[in-house]
Amino acid sequence: METQMPDIQSLLERVEKLEKDARFRAVRLRSHGFVIATIMLLIVSYVLLPRLSELWHRKTVSARNLILQDREGDARASLMVLDDSGPYLLLLDREKKIRVLLGLSDDGEPQLLLNDDEGKPRVVLDVSEKGEGRLSIYDAKSELVDTVPRSGEFIMGVEDEAGTDVAPKGE
Image 1 (cartoon, rainbow, N blue to C red):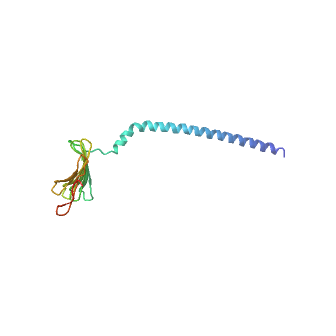
Image 2: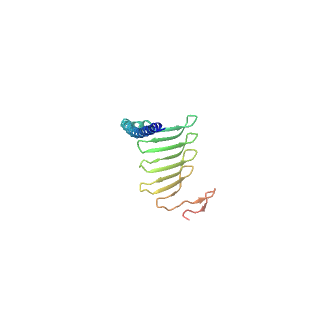
Image 3: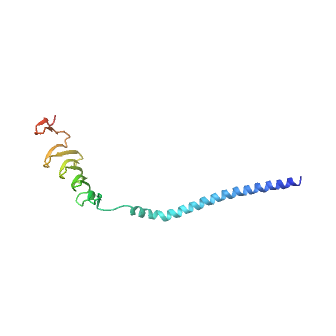
């Protein structure tokens, strides 16, 4: 029986030695894996970073005029830059009339026009050169009906169907 004990003892010692060796190799393998992963990341970064800008610009559309079409191929919206003023967004109805215009005036001031079904401006919201807001309302003949002037005084009146003042201006 004593002869078997040393064999078991020697087996236990060998198993312990193998376990220690396996743990050491696992730690060493993890550290080597980390080093290899870091080197791969650096190589990929070195190759891709200079091309990142190029890859980004490939997905960018650059144009002076972008037209969105409906199913029939008719223009329904347009985003454009005009040489003499600036960028504009136009929204068109089915009859191809401009109903909404958002853009910059010739002076570079922002403006929003809401047009009737004939394409004539009915409401204009804009900002003056001094940065003051202005709301202008036009009739079907494109004549100015009323406005909120630069002074800030609201002068809009209310008229009945006959054109008689129901609530006079400035009240």
